[in-house]
Every structure is written in structure tokens, then in C-alpha cells.
Length: 198
Image (tube, rainbow, N blue to C red; front, side, top):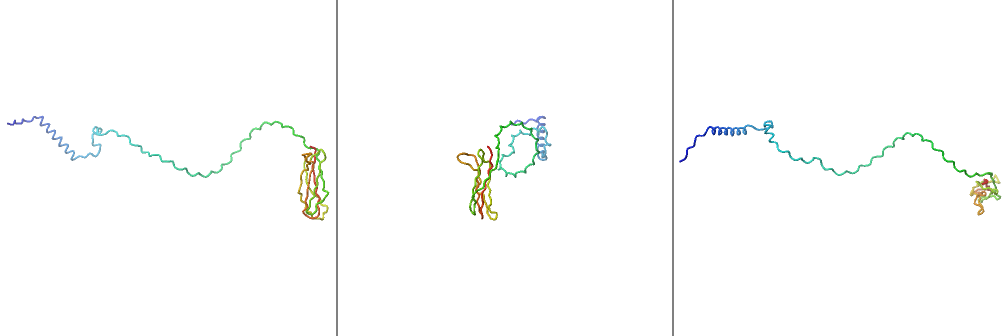
């Protein structure tokens, strides 16, 4: 024999009614309300919805590329203006007096001589002049003489050198001249020696 159910208590009735209202209200909210902004959520609830902070992402900087080739060399610039002249430096000390040099030549005399044989057309005339004993030739020269002014000689000096008597001395003791005639007539050679005491 089945035991009859007892009459529910007032507390049970209130609890069932509250459960019904709660379930019905949730259904209505889900059917009629859509959350489109965080302002619709209670701040304390919104705070609980935030998750933990994620790991830091990779840097956005790219890898360094290879170095490019050197550029072409530029043109040379123009020369700058000349700077101003600086001030003069101080005068240096006077140097020491040098040693006295040897005495120069004395009794300088010019001696000359003329060839005794003339040079005809195409020929040569030679003459030598010597300095007096004890003197040396410090210079000299060569020239010519025309015995006939009407002739047309063309003299050319082919030799003009100091006269050195080997092997008795190595110093010039006179002068030697050779004149060649490339024209007509005749030409006499002439030599001059500048003699001086050493």
C-alpha cells in the first residue's frame, strides 16, 4: 500500500517559486538582451573576465642586410685660396768666420803670337803662344789675320785649347790655336794666352 505524499511545507513552496523565476528570467534575458559594450557588464564582473597577460611577442625590427658596394669617388675639389704670409722669423746668429783663402794670381799679362805659315783654300794654320817662365796660362783664345784684304777667305777656328807640356808639367803654360780656311785667299792663325803668376 503506497504511503500518501505529505503536504509541502511553505519553505519548499517559496524555494520552488524562486527557482522558477530565476530560470524564467535567464531565458528572457538570453532571448531579449545582447551585450554589445563592456559598459553593460558590472565592473567587478568585468575585472574577473580579464585573463593573464600573454608572453612578449618578437621584436618587429628586421635583420641587418649585407653592406653595399663602395660608391664612386667624387671629383677633386678646387684648390683653396693661398693663406696670408706669416710674420718674418727672428734673425739668426752670425756664423763663424771662414778660413782665409789662398792669394789670387798676380802680374796678369796677355801674350799673343801669329802663325808664320798661312792657310790657303781648304788648308789649316796652327800657332802656339807660351807664357814666360814662372807663370801659367789662366785663359786664352784663337783668331786669324788676312794678309790680302781683297781675297775672300772664310776662316773657321777648329782648335782653341790650353798648351800643356807633358810630362814636365801638368799646368797650362800657353795656348794653342788652329784655324781652317774654307774660302779663297789665305789666312794666318793667331793665338792669345792670359799669363799670370800662380
